[in-house]
Structure formats: structure tokens, C-alpha cells
Length: 303
View 1 (spheres, rainbow, N blue to C red):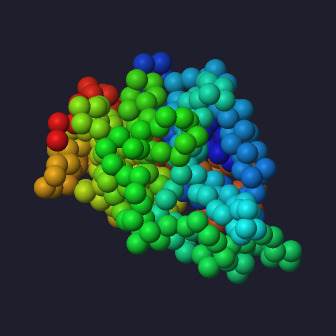
View 2: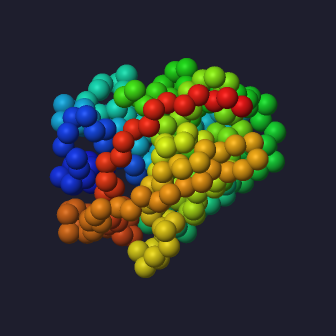
């Protein structure tokens, strides 16, 4: 409900033209439950309830990046597997409009310990630490993955977890937090002579600024980050959100060059949300509105 109310507040400040695609991005870890992770039933409930309201006709010109959902389940060896999944939904569409992008570079800070949780009287399986989990990729394991290469990140199915897809006649590239820092998409670039992403979205929690070597958007495209880690008092350009235009695409020898786009409005959500946001978050947060931008023509990869 808090996500829905935030989106409705964003719609009140957004461009109204149907020719403008509104891109709404929430930070990583928005959905992790009272125990640190949902079971599969809870994860499915989160996705379906988001989709229910976001599929209404008034959202048909919107593309939602709902942050990430942390989930856990038991593998065949009765050990905890965990996923941290970015949920993407094309507004105004039904179940076919939902996509999932899986985070690969997981870290100990991704999982809450019992001391961080409000309700610890009956610890559940979702209270997780790195040592309790299997199937994770630390830095060394991430670099050793064999399924990287040109075109490997292009989604073949909406729930296959890869990070590049086409929506609303725009090619998007999505990374979750540390995946951007370790250049996940740059290590599996667009296939030769295929279209480069026009918009790169990063949902994160403490990623800091953009990594120029990890920007895969084409020239005149955009890279857009929403981060939930930084305090309101931080005035760094890296805090909370940032939208930049790619003035020079990444090459073999150098990273992308970027020009920051200044936001047009900052809306403090404290006075626009019911007070029960305090049961979920330490701060109500704020909404950042950026001016509409001309979608670039698609560029192909030549190298």
C-alpha cells in the first residue's frame, strides 16, 4: 500500500502526455518482510498484489521498477536458498507485463540478522546471515561464472532473471546494486550488431555513484539510479537518486561519459503517507521528479 500511495503521489507530479513513458524506480530491499526474507508464498503475494493495482488503465503509460523482493526457500538438501529479485511491471498490463531480474553479486549486508529486526520473539527461517545460505556468488564466484558473453543477458522469458529487455519500444538494462559495481551487464554486452540499451536502471542500497565502466546504455541514452541507503542530510550527488545522460558510450578502452540531469522537484513523503509507514521504515522517504527526456534512436554495437 505504501508503494501504491507513493506511485499515486508521483502521478500527481508527472507528465500527463500519453506519448511520455513514466519510469518509476524504487530502491533495493523495499520488500523483505519482518523476518528479513519472504517464503515463496509471500514473495508471490507481493508480486501479484503489486501487479493487481499497477495493471489498472490509468498506469498504461508507466513502467514500474518496484525495487527488490528478498525471498528464501529450502533446496533439496534442506538448506536455505535465497533470491534478491527486482520486480518490473508495465503499467496497464496483466500478468504478461511482469518481469524479474535476479541479483547475482550477493553480499553479507544483503541479509538482516535478528538484532536488526523488530519482531524477534519467534525467529523464522527468513532471519538470514551469509553463513546460513547456499547458492550465493561472492566476488570470486561471480567472476568465475561461465554463462557470460555477448547477448547472454537478453531476456528470453520474463522470469528468467536476466537484465536486458524491450518494453514500450525502448531497450532497458537493469542491474541490482553490487551487480553494477562488478560490471555484470558490461561482462555480457549486447551481441554484435544488436541494439544497445537506451535506458539503464539501477535499483540499489549503498551503491554510491555510477561506475563509468559498467554503463552499457548507448550514446544519448540514460542511466537512472534509485538508492535507499543514504541519509537525508547527505548532499552528495550520489545520494538517493541520480539521472544522467550518456554523452559518450563506453568503449573497450574507456568508460562512459555522463551529464547529470537535474531533478525538477523533491516531494517529502512524510506528510503524504499514513503514519503506519513507521512500522516499515525509519524514514518516510522522498519522491524525486525528473524532467521528461527525448528517447534516443537505437544504436547497434559495432565492437
